[in-house]
Image 1 (spheres, rainbow, N blue to C red):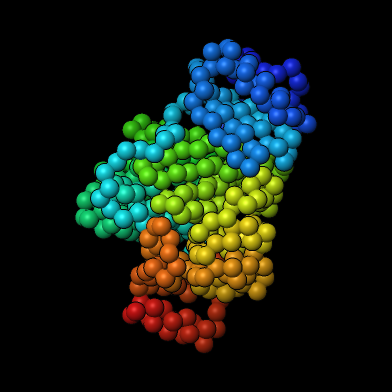
Image 2: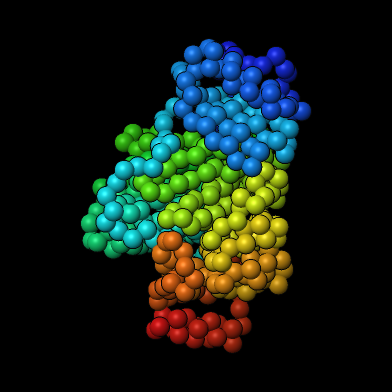
Length: 423
């Protein structure tokens, strides 16, 4: 295999490890570094003809991205005394400045009520940019059987009946409840929606720890990458920590990817999640995806007070994800749970992180109880909750997942659903 680092000048220091990041991208990790070694590495690149494309410094984390025949992303983290040099042959550029666009729509965030008839998880967020296009986060589970259609109808409705345009579609990780319905949209509804670019960073299906991920995740990762290779009309932007990019009037900072977790274990597939901070109309919205314990350590160690935000998506649907300390630093007025009320109630007594997020928030919203519409900038009291659309198929859930409820509980849940539906 060709050594991609042969064409990249490096400091005279032995890296502690080398990581195959996927899609031909590789990373060298230099431990016990100082800032001057990072500065020297950047100077070596500049003196060898690499062109500085992007620079972003945040909370003692220094990042530069250079372009030549490959993209080289270099970053130094003061809190870790570590430098990473990533060689990425995928050189599709992202916007380093806000895009000039018409202002014809209200910037708005939606937590969409995915179809939870047969599944408790699944996550789909949409942000309408001021020009009427969308930035979308993840998609629903394969068992949310009609959500490819429902998602397109939802975006069309909020495009004034026009064919929806997705300026960017971000994927936190490749679990089926985050990518499955997007793949259905690409396969079966491609002519019904315009998609300009996808943003993600997934490890390969043959990753060091993939034997722990299960056959479904292996197959899903391979399918996603195959469909992306075939979708020639969609730009693919491979994300790395510290990158600072814009989509229309939305600003994003990449906080963590699987590259930052390495060499720690990623047996928990959720630790492959990419975390984003979005700023829109002066409000900050934090999307950790399904980030779990190892990702949480990276994020807390590096960013501290920068995590303060207005709206936080609670990691891993409110199951075991990021720590209570994560939500204390986020200190968000609005917490979003991409989960059913049933599972929320089951998790609440055993997940301190959920309780902390709710104690700090002025409002919180559970996806199964109806789509939440949040105008940006965020102002408490302006969130609108749409009528509840879907309800649990108890027999189907039992056959699939062996969850069983008493007749009294089933009736109580159904009565609560009817009350929400009729609001």
